[in-house]
Image (cartoon, rainbow, N blue to C red; front, side, top):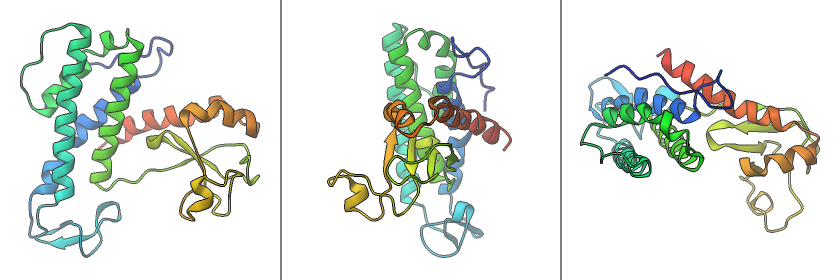
Length: 233
């Protein structure tokens, strides 16, 4: 695998890596592992039935090809091709040559300096890179670790607010929490927890006497931690 180019820094935070670069880097490191998961083996490997394996996934000797992994490879491959073509079109650079997913990701990383100059494009790249990296991680059996933050839930008054970084969502993990909206799924579905997407965090912070900076740091810190964790594999 070729070495990754240096990732550009955020213009407003020169000490921190570009979020899009974080997720593209994770995807570049993890994507080759999906092909390894497809290969049947006589040893215990992750499968959809039987046993216990990586990240709590079941295993079985000689596991068959897993359709979920195959679908993930296809989805990420198509997504990376479409993302690179869209970036090249927006930056008005020549249409990208054919290449492997790893080659395309490396080329995208090399364009991030120019992408960062266009905020709308930069946000699109970050969102797509995060989505694909998260899907890849889930297919490989990785679990999402929530981050506890201060402040009390505005509905149940519990210190039960958690940031789920990959979802960019805050959840109240108190199973008894219910909001006042009779149509909200936290009232209609016992499995649902009330949640706030990132666009609602300012309102959440104001309603709970919380700290928007803390919520954002929990999200952004997980992006940096993900880079460190994956890079140590």
